[in-house]
Image (cartoon, rainbow, N blue to C red; front, side, top):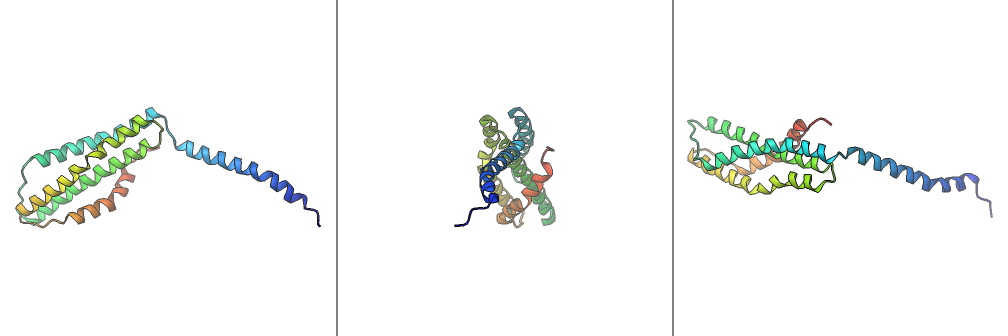
Length: 164
Protein backbone atom coordinates (compact mmCIF):
# COMPACT_ATOMS: atom_id res chain seq x y z
CA UNK A 1 0.00 0.00 0.00
CA UNK A 2 1.30 3.40 -0.97
CA UNK A 3 1.62 6.10 1.60
CA UNK A 4 -0.74 9.00 1.09
CA UNK A 5 0.81 12.20 -0.12
CA UNK A 6 1.13 14.94 2.47
CA UNK A 7 -0.80 17.29 0.19
CA UNK A 8 -4.02 15.23 0.51
CA UNK A 9 -3.77 15.10 4.28
CA UNK A 10 -3.23 18.87 4.50
CA UNK A 11 -6.09 19.60 2.12
CA UNK A 12 -8.41 17.33 4.04
CA UNK A 13 -7.60 19.27 7.18
CA UNK A 14 -8.09 22.62 5.43
CA UNK A 15 -11.39 21.74 3.76
CA UNK A 16 -13.60 22.32 6.85
CA UNK A 17 -11.76 25.56 7.58
CA UNK A 18 -12.34 26.77 4.01
CA UNK A 19 -16.04 25.88 4.27
CA UNK A 20 -16.36 27.88 7.48
CA UNK A 21 -14.65 30.89 5.90
CA UNK A 22 -16.94 30.70 2.85
CA UNK A 23 -20.04 30.46 5.04
CA UNK A 24 -18.92 33.44 7.10
CA UNK A 25 -18.30 35.49 3.97
CA UNK A 26 -21.69 34.53 2.56
CA UNK A 27 -23.34 35.42 5.85
CA UNK A 28 -21.69 38.84 5.84
CA UNK A 29 -22.85 39.44 2.27
CA UNK A 30 -26.43 38.65 3.24
CA UNK A 31 -26.10 40.69 6.42
CA UNK A 32 -24.72 43.62 4.41
CA UNK A 33 -28.10 43.77 2.63
CA UNK A 34 -29.94 43.95 5.97
CA UNK A 35 -30.88 47.38 7.26
CA UNK A 36 -31.96 48.71 10.63
CA UNK A 37 -35.71 48.69 11.33
CA UNK A 38 -35.80 52.51 11.55
CA UNK A 39 -34.26 52.89 8.11
CA UNK A 40 -36.51 50.21 6.65
CA UNK A 41 -39.56 51.92 8.16
CA UNK A 42 -38.64 55.24 6.52
CA UNK A 43 -38.07 53.54 3.17
CA UNK A 44 -41.34 51.59 3.38
CA UNK A 45 -43.31 54.68 4.41
CA UNK A 46 -41.92 56.58 1.42
CA UNK A 47 -43.47 54.04 -0.95
CA UNK A 48 -46.68 53.73 1.06
CA UNK A 49 -47.29 57.50 0.81
CA UNK A 50 -47.41 57.07 -2.98
CA UNK A 51 -49.64 54.02 -2.55
CA UNK A 52 -52.06 56.04 -0.40
CA UNK A 53 -52.19 58.87 -2.96
CA UNK A 54 -52.85 56.46 -5.81
CA UNK A 55 -55.43 54.48 -3.84
CA UNK A 56 -57.21 57.73 -3.03
CA UNK A 57 -57.30 58.58 -6.73
CA UNK A 58 -58.76 55.17 -7.60
CA UNK A 59 -61.30 55.30 -4.75
CA UNK A 60 -62.52 58.63 -6.08
CA UNK A 61 -62.72 57.18 -9.56
CA UNK A 62 -64.72 54.21 -8.29
CA UNK A 63 -67.16 56.48 -6.44
CA UNK A 64 -67.80 58.81 -9.38
CA UNK A 65 -69.91 58.09 -12.40
CA UNK A 66 -68.19 57.21 -15.65
CA UNK A 67 -66.53 60.03 -17.52
CA UNK A 68 -67.68 60.66 -21.07
CA UNK A 69 -65.25 60.99 -23.95
CA UNK A 70 -65.96 62.46 -27.39
CA UNK A 71 -63.79 59.96 -29.28
CA UNK A 72 -62.37 56.50 -28.84
CA UNK A 73 -58.88 58.06 -29.01
CA UNK A 74 -59.71 60.19 -25.97
CA UNK A 75 -60.96 57.05 -24.19
CA UNK A 76 -57.74 55.21 -25.07
CA UNK A 77 -55.66 58.10 -23.70
CA UNK A 78 -57.66 58.01 -20.48
CA UNK A 79 -57.29 54.22 -20.09
CA UNK A 80 -53.54 54.43 -20.77
CA UNK A 81 -53.15 57.12 -18.10
CA UNK A 82 -55.14 55.08 -15.56
CA UNK A 83 -53.14 51.96 -16.41
CA UNK A 84 -49.92 53.93 -15.88
CA UNK A 85 -51.20 54.90 -12.44
CA UNK A 86 -52.09 51.29 -11.73
CA UNK A 87 -48.60 50.15 -12.77
CA UNK A 88 -47.09 52.80 -10.50
CA UNK A 89 -49.30 51.68 -7.62
CA UNK A 90 -48.23 48.06 -8.01
CA UNK A 91 -44.57 49.07 -8.34
CA UNK A 92 -44.70 51.04 -5.08
CA UNK A 93 -46.47 48.16 -3.32
CA UNK A 94 -43.81 45.71 -4.49
CA UNK A 95 -40.94 48.05 -3.65
CA UNK A 96 -42.32 48.67 -0.16
CA UNK A 97 -42.28 44.90 0.36
CA UNK A 98 -38.72 44.63 -1.01
CA UNK A 99 -37.59 47.28 1.49
CA UNK A 100 -39.47 45.61 4.36
CA UNK A 101 -37.84 42.24 3.67
CA UNK A 102 -34.43 43.79 4.27
CA UNK A 103 -35.11 43.98 8.00
CA UNK A 104 -36.15 41.40 10.53
CA UNK A 105 -38.69 43.76 12.11
CA UNK A 106 -42.14 42.16 11.86
CA UNK A 107 -43.96 45.48 12.37
CA UNK A 108 -42.25 46.99 9.32
CA UNK A 109 -43.13 43.92 7.30
CA UNK A 110 -46.78 44.00 8.41
CA UNK A 111 -46.96 47.71 7.54
CA UNK A 112 -45.64 47.01 4.05
CA UNK A 113 -48.07 44.13 3.50
CA UNK A 114 -51.22 45.89 4.74
CA UNK A 115 -52.11 47.77 1.52
CA UNK A 116 -51.63 44.60 -0.53
CA UNK A 117 -54.77 43.23 1.12
CA UNK A 118 -56.83 45.76 -0.83
CA UNK A 119 -56.33 43.91 -4.10
CA UNK A 120 -60.11 43.46 -4.41
CA UNK A 121 -60.27 47.17 -5.23
CA UNK A 122 -58.10 46.50 -8.28
CA UNK A 123 -60.70 44.08 -9.59
CA UNK A 124 -63.42 46.66 -8.88
CA UNK A 125 -61.38 49.19 -10.83
CA UNK A 126 -61.12 46.91 -13.86
CA UNK A 127 -64.86 46.21 -13.63
CA UNK A 128 -65.52 49.97 -13.51
CA UNK A 129 -63.32 50.57 -16.57
CA UNK A 130 -65.22 47.84 -18.41
CA UNK A 131 -68.54 49.49 -17.55
CA UNK A 132 -67.24 52.92 -18.55
CA UNK A 133 -65.91 51.57 -21.85
CA UNK A 134 -69.38 50.26 -22.68
CA UNK A 135 -70.93 53.61 -21.71
CA UNK A 136 -68.50 55.35 -24.06
CA UNK A 137 -69.04 52.88 -26.88
CA UNK A 138 -65.39 51.85 -26.69
CA UNK A 139 -63.68 48.53 -26.33
CA UNK A 140 -61.79 47.43 -23.25
CA UNK A 141 -59.80 44.23 -22.71
CA UNK A 142 -59.02 43.59 -19.02
CA UNK A 143 -56.54 40.84 -19.89
CA UNK A 144 -54.49 43.38 -21.84
CA UNK A 145 -54.35 45.63 -18.79
CA UNK A 146 -53.22 42.79 -16.51
CA UNK A 147 -50.52 41.73 -18.98
CA UNK A 148 -49.28 45.31 -19.20
CA UNK A 149 -49.14 45.53 -15.42
CA UNK A 150 -47.17 42.29 -15.18
CA UNK A 151 -44.78 43.42 -17.90
CA UNK A 152 -44.19 47.01 -16.74
CA UNK A 153 -44.15 46.74 -12.93
CA UNK A 154 -40.56 45.44 -12.69
CA UNK A 155 -39.27 48.31 -14.86
CA UNK A 156 -41.19 50.92 -12.90
CA UNK A 157 -40.10 49.32 -9.64
CA UNK A 158 -36.46 49.76 -10.68
CA UNK A 159 -37.17 53.42 -11.54
CA UNK A 160 -38.75 54.23 -8.17
CA UNK A 161 -36.35 52.28 -5.95
CA UNK A 162 -34.60 54.48 -3.41
CA UNK A 163 -30.81 54.68 -3.61
CA UNK A 164 -28.95 52.34 -1.30
